[in-house]
Length: 349
Image 1: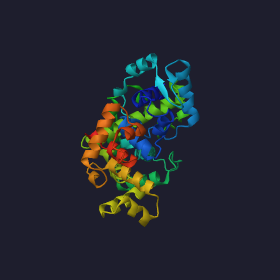
Image 2: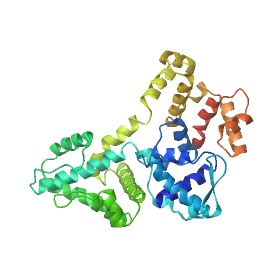
Image 3: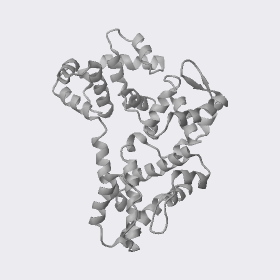
């Protein structure tokens, strides 16, 4: 199961520094600074928000066999570490062959594939002169976008379909055969209705979690390919251009953006908290969130270069990101907030 491999890989990277629940929060994209920062610290950005709909029951059902087969063992509390057999599985798992990157595409992957599925249905029915059918997508934003796009491209539907077909063939030819097979079974045209995920489970004899993760893999592959090679895929780029821009503007929460504006006006965290009638700890969270996503963030407003280096030296000596252990090793005047802030830049050094 792909989900089990992801759990094992994540626990391996976390190396007993977080509970197993942190992996669940990572996969479902919990909007907490801790989860987002962990994704960066442990180089698990690809898994962040990869499986938004994952239920805890499904997660536990994937976890329990790993325990029963002695691939992981409980350390203390809800912490798990890998056994030798678990480490062997991680080494055999060829993560490089997958294109998941939830941190980059979590805000746009669903919108993109819904647009693609719906325009294929619309264009194929138009080509067949069928005017009455039930749209397979009921998302209002997607329907409005497709209607607008369709009006702008109402002529030469056959030409548009051929261009789209050529671009998709070019992309899917770079992937193992299961991916074009999945895609072809999912699309709805004038002649056939796409299969549900439950039907795909039976057809491909794969667990539902695998079906979902395989779909995410080809969607992220397309999004990455189109973003960096728009001239090769001009039709698909038109499906994605506004989404890439949307991703840029929605990385930081609106509340954190408000705090960022006040930081730029040289207000202290305490002054911002008073002005916004929020707790100072909430403002600290905002500042850490901003620093995570802004490489030019003025760190020295809150922590000196010497303090940052002291924190990084503590991390090196401990070989750990545990805040409590780092706090015990650095100058007592360095706060937990400053440690968290310094850690946002650790992977950029």
